[in-house]
Image 1: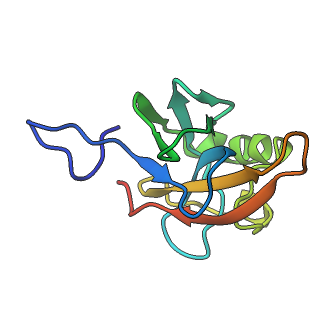
Image 2: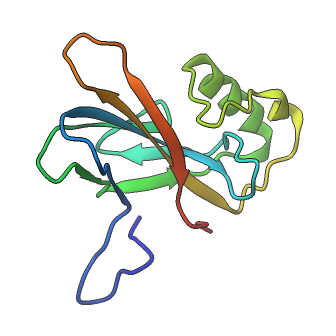
Length: 140
């Protein structure tokens, strides 16, 4: 998946920059519904840093950025949406803490947003400090 600003001359990919912090961080990227309140979406992300439908990247570099090259969206059929959401619940990926009461609801399978969650690790072995999740522009 290329970023919205991609052109023939320059390829741009989704990414995140952590500002105001320098050190070890983990970024988790997942799919959420296109409209607020942002609920976990059944579609899965696939690519270099992805497992179980979500992507995870460690960041500890000077510019504190992560670019998601080789990222794709694996669409889930409507009949498999509930199972996909149950799987996401099992791995505890619920960025906006909306829980999973919407498992039986009908999600819009034609539009999503990417949700970026960052977890900061200021000292080795410490408990992660979660940062408020942010969402991308709508992807269709």
